[in-house]
Length: 102
Image (cartoon, rainbow, N blue to C red; front, side):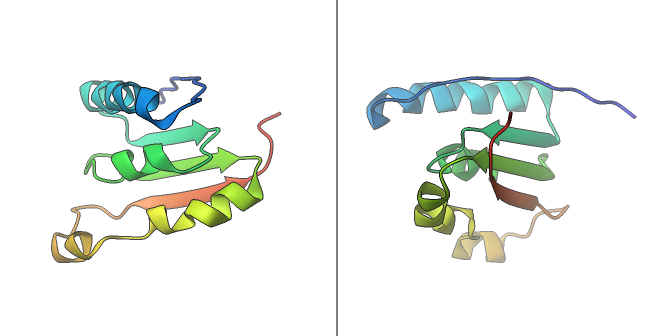
């Protein structure tokens, strides 16, 4: 059993500034081949959109304290039509949780 945990903390103020950061997170996940990823402060579920396309990731847990924001953006977790056509080798377990990390 191999467990690894990488905590990445970020604060996004304007959408254009977070795209390069999200690309760096995805590249880091690719490099280390994480199978389970947790996004604390998931807010608009943007990182989930990037991560769910990585076939080697089996589990994504997105956590945020703002229920309204999660409800507004929960559609980003739904599979796209192309994801139904191109099946993954292993299923993706995606959880969106509302609550505090503390």
